[in-house]
Amino acid sequence: MATVRMSVRDRNDHVLRFPQGAPRRQVLEGQPSGTFVTTIFAKDFDSGINSVVLYSVESGRNVEEYFTLNNMSCKLLVTRSLDREDISNFTLVIECHDLGSPSRSFTVQLCVTILDENDHSPLFAETQYQISVTEDLEEGSAILDLSASDKDAGLNGEIMYSLIDDTYGAFAINIVMGSIITTKALDQETKSQYTFKAVASDHSTYFPRSTTVSVVVHVDDVNDNDPIFLQNPIRVFMPAETAVNETVATVRAEDVDLRSNGAIVFNLMMTETLFQINVKTGDITLRKPLGSKDFSTQLLVTASDQGIAPRTATAVVIVFTEEQEEMVSFNHSLYEASVPECSSCLCYVLNPRFMIMLVQQPKKYKDDSSKNALTGFIVTQVSVSDADSRPPLQFGFIYDNNPEMKFAIDQHTGVIIVVEPLDFEETAVYTLHIIVSDRVHQTEAELTILVLDINDNSPVFTQDFYQDFLVWGYAALG
Image 1 (tube, rainbow, N blue to C red):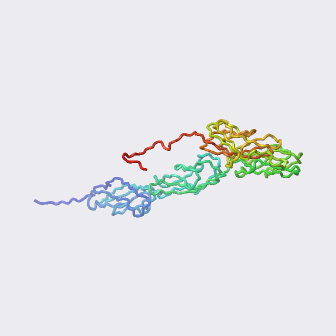
Image 2 (image 1 turned 90 degrees about the vertical axis):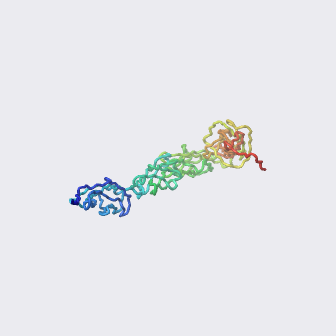
C-alpha cells in the first residue's frame, strides 16, 4: 500500500464581495484633516496571493481633494475640512482587486453624507433698516418686513425674530415672519423717531446663533392738531383818539404740528371796516378813526394752519374805549355747596361757548342741601352785579378738556344743576371755575362742591370662605 499526497493549488475563482452591500457613512462638517470615516473591507474566499486585496478610489466628484484611502489599512480618512454648505454629499467609487493571476476586481459606491454643524449665524438682507411712517397709522399696521437667512440645515437654519431695546410699547414683531407692526397709536409731537434692534436667532438645540440689526422708524407729521390761542378771549382798551394804522392788539397762537401743518395765518371772520389784521403777525390795526368815544365791539379772529386740510381755531377780541374798573362782579368770589351722591341725573346741554375746569381752591360762601341729588338736582345759584346797562349776562364754566362733566350752569340765571351721577366713593370734592360776561367785561368765581356720602354700599367680606381649627381641651389664652 502506498500513500499519495496531493496538493490542491488554489485557483483564483472567487469574485470579491462587500459583505455589507453598498455602504453609507456620515461625517460631521468641519472635522480636521485625518478624521476617520470608515474602513473598507471586501471578502475573497480564495487563498494565498489570490486572497490579497488592494483598494483604491477610482472616481467621484472632487474626492481626491477631500478623502484618501489607505491601501493597506483600508481606512478612509478626511484630507481637508468638509463644509456641508459647499458640498453636502460625496459618492466615492472604490475599486478592490486581488493579486491573483489573472486578477479579479470589484467596484462599489460609497455614499458619504456631510452632517450639518451650526457654524453660520443668521444674516439680515440689510445692515440697517430705516423707514418713515405717518403718525396716523392704525394700531396693528405692518410697517416693515425683515428678512434673514441661515445657510445651516434643519433647526440650525430655522429663524425666529425678536426685538430688543425699548420700543416704548409702540412696536412688536412676528417671531416667524419678521413683520414689525405698531402696537399703539403714534404721535409725532410726542416722539418723532424710534431706534431699536431686531434679532434673528436660529433654533439650534445646543449652541444657537443670532444676529442683530438696527431699525430706525421716523414718524412723519400729519395735520392732527388745531392751532391754540395763547389767550382767549382778549380784552383790549383802546383810547378814542387812537391813530389810524396803529396796532391796537396782537393775537398769538401756536400749532405743534410741523412745517406747513404748523404754520399759522390769521384772519377776521367777519368783514370789518374799522379794523384789519396782519395774516402773519396777528397784529390788529385801526383802519379809520373811531366815530364815538363810547365804543365797544367784538372781533372774531381765526388762526388757521396751512396743511392740505387746514385746521382752524377761533378767538374773541373785545375792544372798548371806556377805561374803567371791572363793571361785572360776582356777589362772592368763592362759593361752596354740598350735594348728596346720586344714582341718576338729567342730561343737560351746555352753552358751547363755555366749558368746565376742575381745580382745588379754598372755600367760602356755603350752600348746604340735605336731599339726595337726583335728576336735575339744583346745587346752587350764583349771582352777580352789573353796574351798567350792557347786553344780558351770560354764565358758563371754564373747561380743561376733562370729559367727566358732572354739572351744568344755566347761561341766563346762573343756576347750577347735576347732570351726571355723583359717587362719593369715586370723587368727594369738585371745584369749578365759573365765568360771567356781558360781552365787554367778564369776571370769574370759584365753586367747591362737596359730595356727601349716603349709605349706598353693603358690607362685603374680604373673602368668600373662612376656615379655622379649634383644638379640644385647650383653654383660651388671655
